[in-house]
Image 1: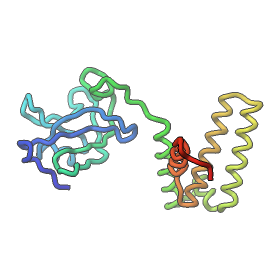
Image 2: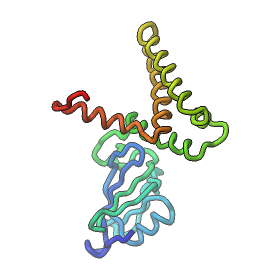
Image 3: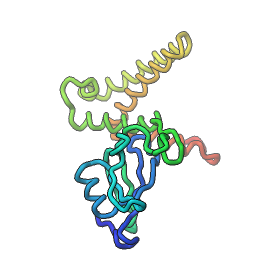
Image 4: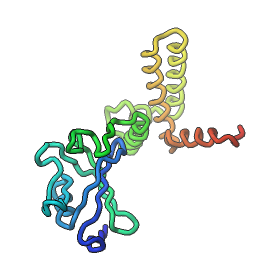
Amino acid sequence: MTIDFEKCGGLVPAIIQDADTQKVLMLGYMNQQAYEKTIETQLVTFYSRSRQCLWTKGETSGNYLHLVDMKCDCDNDTLLVSVHPDGPTCHTGTDTCWGETNEPNPLIFLSTLSDFIEKRHEEMPEGSYTTSLFKDGLNRMAQKVGEEALELVIEATNGTNDRLIYEGSDMLYHLIVLLTSKGLRIEDMARELMVRHNPGWKKH
């Protein structure tokens, strides 16, 4: 990755984003030394324009930003930094510097779960329930989706909301396993629903 630090007088903006929630947490600036220290320590370090020195986020508050990934934009003069934050990011005590709450989005977790199940499919570790499903084959995986769907229907008609959510979660998990075995993802179904949401969509 080539970063053009000289374009803006030795500094580049660094947009800090939570790797899990995708929420933008703050904006800081890095020079070459701050960038190198971030890579070396895996803790996000900035250059303070007011104090004219390096500072590692969290060195006084304990609210560190643990580096996950860094990307440079198309002009090589802006960084997108993915992190795992320790506590609130803003010095005012809020999760973000815009006063927003940084909470996990359960819908985003479905993509994370799909990644996890794909990894299970690739590595097939012994002792994993997901591995056992893949080993049992397509028919068994499809059967499990059907079984869980039936349990979902039973809870919907004669059970409680808590059990409905529980059985629905089982069905969704087994559906993702089935999709993974076919080289598909839950996002493929989400895209299909997006297409259907278009007023001009016609059933085919």
